[in-house]
Structures are given as C-alpha cells and as structure tokens.
Length: 282
Length: 256
Image (cartoon, rainbow over all chains, first blue to last red; front, side, top):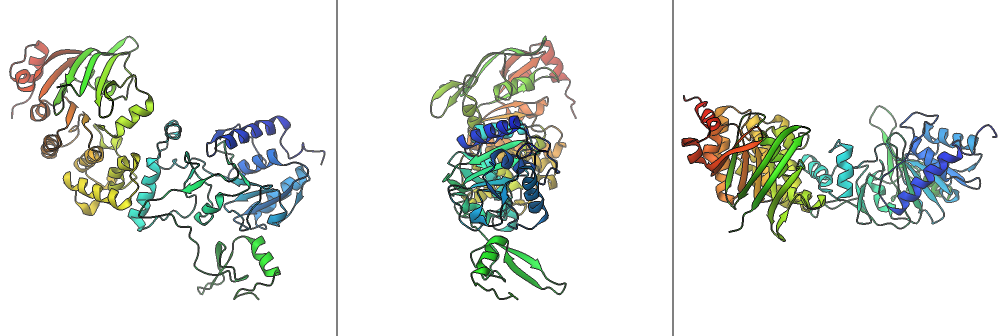
C-alpha cells in the first residue's frame, strides 16, 4: 500500500481535480476544463471517471464499479482492483452499501441516496460535437445558450426513422440552462438523473469535468409532437422477472435463441435472492 | 422614410493593406443594392463588415431593428448580433457548402433557423421546410436527402431557402451565382428576383457579374482598391459610366 500515494494521484493533482468538481457543481452542466493526467490504462477505459473517483475517495469510502450495469466485466473488475490496490478502500457490488459508485453507461436500478456519489465515465462530453466540429464555436454556443442545433439532430432522427432514434447519450437540458451529454447511458436512465445523489462526470481524453448537484432539474430535449420516451426492451427479465429494469439482450445460440436479462447485475441478484423467479431461471 | 441600413465611414485594414475605406450609404426598405468591382477591390471585405462577420476598424452600421428602432450593430452585444443574424438578416455565401450543413438533410437545413429561434413542433417545422423547398423549386420528395446529393444550382437554391425561412428583412449575398453555368444562373436570378419582389426584401449583392446587378439591383456601387469610386442608379451607371475604371468594367463585358 505504501508504494502509492492514496488513490494513485498525488495530492496536488487531486486538489486540482476537486477544484474542477466544485466549479462543475456550482454551474450544473457546464464543462469545466481540467488538466487530465496520464493514467495507467488506455483512453476510453474510463480515465476521466477514475481521476474523478480518485479525487473523491476517502479511506472510509466503499467503492462500487459497474460497466454497463455489471460488476463482473473487465472494465469494472480492473478499475475496482486498481482502487483496492492503490487506495485500499473497501469495495462492494451492493448498490446500497456503496458510497462512491463509478459507472460506465448505466445508472443503477436501485434509487440512490443523498450520501452517495455517482461518477460517470464520459467519452465525448460535448453534446454538439458531431454537428459543430469547432470547439471555439461550441463554447460560444453554450455561452450564448444557442441550442437550436441540438434539435436539428433530433429532427434528423425523426426525418430518417420516423421517431427519435437516439437511444443513448440522449441530450438533456440542466436546470433550464446548459445542454449536457449525459454520457452514453440509455435514454431509459435519463429520468433517473433527477436524483438525491451527487453526479460527477469525467472525460479524461477530452479533459472535461461536469457535475449535477442533488435534485437538479434535468429535462430530456424533445419536440412538442414527438415527446421524449424512456424506452426499453418490451420484456421481463428472464432470470428475476423484473419488468421495470433496463434489459440486455443475450444471444444464447446460433438458432435465433435469445434472452433478456437485467443489465444491472446487483439488482437482478438481489431480486433472485429475495425469491423472484423469471421464466428462464434454471 | 427611414433607411433600413445606414452605413457611415466604414474602414477595414489588414495591417498596412487597405481592405475598404470611406464607405457610406443608405439602404431603404425594399431596395436592392449591387456592389461591383474586380477581385481584390474590397467588395467581400465590405460585405463581411456590414454583415457582422468581420469587425471594421471604424465606422457605423446602423440597422433599423423591429423592436428598438435604429441601432448600431457594431455596438451591439454579441448575443444580440447573433440573434439578428438568424432572424432579420440572411447571408447567402458564394459556395453553398459554406452556408449549408452538408451532413444534414435538406429539411433539417431549412429548419435549423426555425429551431434556433425556438420552434419545437416537428410537424410545423417540416411543413415550412417543405413549403420553402417548393418556393425555391426543389421537389418535396427530396426533403430528406442530403445536400451532397444535390447539384450546384440546387445547393444554392437550398441555401437561399434556408436563409429566407425566418422572413428576414435584409439579405447579404456574396456572388450568389458564382460557379454556376449560365442557364442555371438565369433560373437562379429569376427566382431571386421573384423572391425579392414578393417578400419586399432589401438586399446587398456583391458580384463581379454585371448581368446580375442589371437584373436585380436598383442601385449600384463600384469599388476599386478599397474605395467607392462611383454610385448611382444601376441603369445610369451601366449605360453612362463616368469613371474611367467603370467605363473599362462595362466595356469588358463580352457581347454575344
């Protein structure tokens, strides 16, 4: 343990990141630039989220890491091990027991409380990026609240597919001001973003941090005649029978066999432990 | 009658090189003014200064706004100026690619300005996009096609539709017919002339093509080396040019 400073980063760096986090919390949805550090993992693996977690963790914290809702996938396991080794903090897979939850592309099904922090890994923090490639221009658009372009993207969706086909990284308006990319969470999770926990977003490669304080108003953008809809696969979980959770489609053979299971593994396991049974539970 | 746009003493230099200097004129509602001159005479610099794309070193550009009456656009705050640019002003670029979003469908291109001023009803946006495509003679069936699949003339017409959808009162055009073949040019000019008359638009057209100003412009301004050397009614300037340079310009046009 003594080989690393607590949580890998040096104290000055954590201080710098905490400053960015505080600024982000003070201006919900605003992308705060920060001096992202080289981390011992490739970009795209959650270097932004890891730095935010490192700056947020205290020795008393309990950490949970999920990747697409699962506690046992490569990304989640390696980040959890990283902090076990460098910060020696307790880790858990139980959502309710965690104080800091680092997530990639999901919000846990269980409702989070005021003493929890949710840290997102963000690949592209700029919601306007694919329509306006110039950073100078997008910054100006944020500053002047010119968000018409965001609706052009949604217009294109409807024109091409007949409905708003954007199903993840669905743009939101924060507290009536900034338009924000909620990271690639499914739009099913968008309504959950008005929550009791603090939400922090870290983009390592793009060097941006942004944040949502508890109970911040988060509105998904839409058209009057094509309202926002939080969609999910129209099934129940095959293992635990839950009908209210976001589902992964799992291909089971090459004959067209498939099953739908909760993407949040902790939620699914705790439901099964409580005796709920889905149709495919063996 | 108060002028829609009144320009005083505009000067823009690039280091020691003069872009344009001592430009002053009034443009009244419904009037179309042409600016002609050879390449490098400062036409485009002047247009960009007037349209707020460049900041002139000195001078005033007073625009008669709908709400607050005449205001110097150079003293406006940037949000106000940008708002003006997407509502009461329009800018038609020489190359349609500069004025269009090439990876967005035709309907999205036309709808962008509507959405930028707060339209949030998909059906309405699409209806006015379809209406405007019809008015610039683009088939409604192509509303979901990208401008990359359009011909040069269609792209230019799409750019015009995209600009006029918010009913602007002043249109800036930078060589609107440049790079188009003559028959396409003729159709575009016809269309422009119809739109300008029907909507009562005021316009400032920069071009080096005298035929364009003959057809469209009420008044003409001839520029050389950054200075305005001659102004007057279009027919008067073209039929009876006074300055040697204007005489050269008029006599340089090939008669077929």
